[in-house]
Amino acid sequence: MLDFQIILEAIYKDVIKSKNKGTVASYIPELACVDKNNFGVHLRTLDGKDYGVGNFNEPFSIQSISKVLALSKAIALNENNVWKRLGVEPSGNPFNRLSLLEIENGIPRNPLNNDGAIVIADILISHLKNPKEDFLNFVRTLTNDYSINYNTKVAQSEKNTGFNNYATTNLLKSFKNLENSVDEVLDFYFHQCSIEMSCSQLSKAFYVFANKGTCMLNKLRLTESQTKRINAIMLTCGFYDEAGEFAFKVGLPGKSGVGGGIAAFLPDNFVITTWSPGLNKKGNSKLGMLALEQFTTKTKQSIF
Ligand SMILES: NC(=O)CC[C@H](N)C(=O)O
Image (tube, rainbow, N blue to C red; front, top):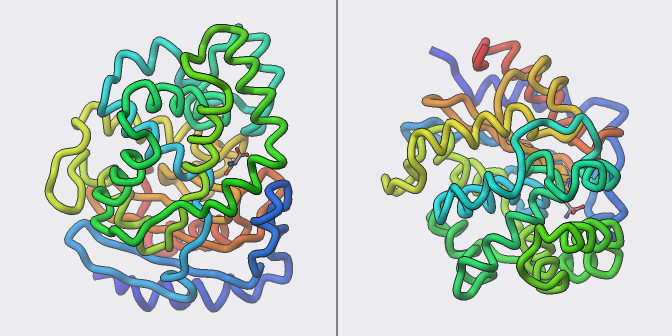
């Protein structure tokens, strides 16, 4: 029997010694205020046991991790609509690369790069009565935690400097792959990315993906087939242009965000989440990746 608490503590002690802790994202100015020394790891098994070390209960900006939650909501609402408007191939490019979208006539490669996530935001706005409120409630009920909220300061900060996302959204509009207005879609998207959650809350939210679509409250949120598809997209596209490297080193499906969070899971077994705000050159958490690589190496718990 693996003692997860002892394993997480050993990994934490080792990884925290790293001299190079990466660089905190500063293109969203509000994110640059976060202390690089934060580091937390949390694991939740499917039978509900929790293990944590470091700052695993401290909320942080989940950023791109929210793209998986938005995709899930869009798929649960109307899956056919989603695949008409974007693809499922990894892009091999940074998450905010604009040129590919023009070459490929306004059809984003996948829902986890910015262009695809913006199309998903557009779909949610078209389907939800009160988009921001309804989406937040979806995340809260997945997690069974009503303290989860948007950080409006972070959303505003990204709005002030989100020139690349404005360009992307305008391009989508010019290719007629956007139903709503550019401002409305980006307001939703910036809020979605600004949601704050701790590692332990994220482990609860991602439980649904490890548990064939049934969330912690034993409620069916996604079908098994929908869950399989979302998990496949996380494995192939969840770590920007480093998805291959993550599969190679860690071997779990998951999603990262520029706030320094990573949520990963072994289907039918557990969810493991890390947070360390310093990023590597590709935008993935430096210590988070190291910790997860050590975890799957030590425990031999990977999908491969
Ligand atoms: N990779 C990320 O976490 C990026 C999310 C961020 N809100 C952006 O659009 O640039």
